[in-house]
Image 1 (spheres, one colour):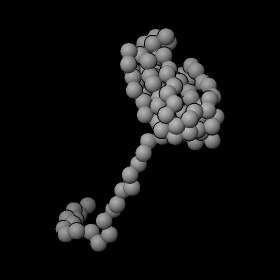
Image 2 (cartoon, one colour):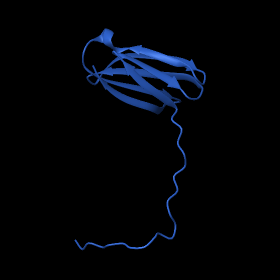
Image 3 (tube, helix red, strand yellow):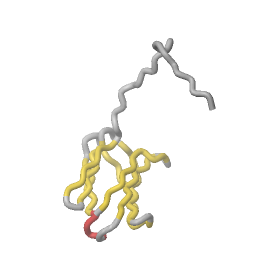
Length: 97
């Protein structure tokens, strides 16, 4: 349980590479917009309400395409939106309505 204090500069500083998100989301009055920053073939979009899968669809997107999801039609709740491509999750967001 000893506390060690490090001083000086590290010999090998950590360098972070710039990260460009695959998808940018925005929410306006219960409508979620997903803007795709690169192309995806057969992307799967899942919408969960309070932890229960309520909608799932597949679509292909070009760079710059926007997909809108009208969450307010499902009513109030905690929503999780996930996007998968090739079986890997590429985006996840939570919204409260």
